[in-house]
Image 1 (cartoon, one colour):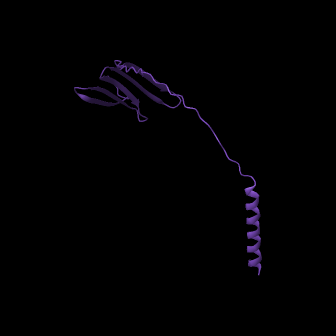
Image 2: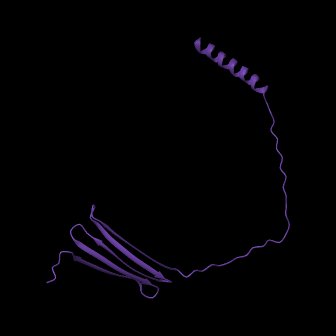
Length: 120
């Protein structure tokens, strides 16, 4: 019995909502105007080539953290040269030198030595 009453109440609510909904229909409208321009397009293609050349360097020596490192790099055209160093916590110093160009590709030289060497 309860189910029948519930179904009737839902049906009445749906019909009442439908009737109420029909009273508020509005139609939207819009308009646009299109302007056309006819003429010769002017497009100019310019190729830019700049000879790549740069140089940079940095050095860090932080006594608080013990961080010690440096780098230097330069480029002139297709030739890149550089060196960087790193002081490891165990006292070892690593130095890496590199060179790159079209003829030889990338060439790397790696050196490592201890800071505690005694040169008598």
